[in-house]
Length: 184
Length: 89
Image (cartoon, rainbow over all chains, first blue to last red):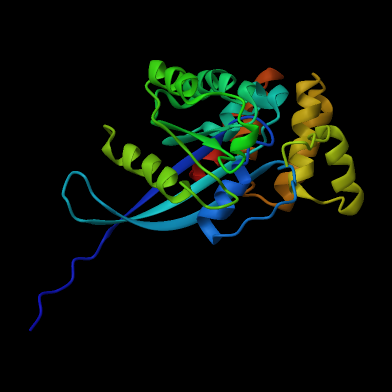
């Protein structure tokens, strides 16, 4: 008789997107959740929550864990950021902060997004992705600048392309791993 | 995609509401725009409409609590906060 299978624990995690309009927040979620990409830009209005279950390992017990990820996609409208910060980030456990490789201001603005989030959710794990890595010819910031900006803030970062899918799964997994590894 | 310019949020809201007057995303955004302009008297009924359409609309109860707080209505703010807590993350 085979030993009974260990049933995974279930954990709900709220992970929020952050970043300016048109950096690709919605496209990253779409790529991660349904593995699709649409080249047309449709601005996000309001708030969208998408669920995805991923398997992980409980860092405390080493046992299997089913993570029920609640991915909050938010409007990148800068003028509404302060008003909506509680509505978006209350109870958030992790942040995927998104910049656009072709617009340097979108990286520099992440500090303001992070400050806003910290006021509501505290110092929660934050991972930066520099999206649109497929548009290398239109690159507006060099790697050393990105690295310096993120390193001084303690943010791990990587490139992603929602269009090709490169780096997307690893980025979301990176947020989940950091949240699981962070103290409760 | 990078050459595109994001349309003005207020314009997007108008377009969406002209297609569907009960679009909760557009109404939530309209409420936020009105509140951001300081027009809480107009923002709150719009937000209430969002919550009638979708009582679980993400973040709406928390925003409602905030707007009542801004209007100096602590009881209404507390009631909305309690609803937000019931909803969970």
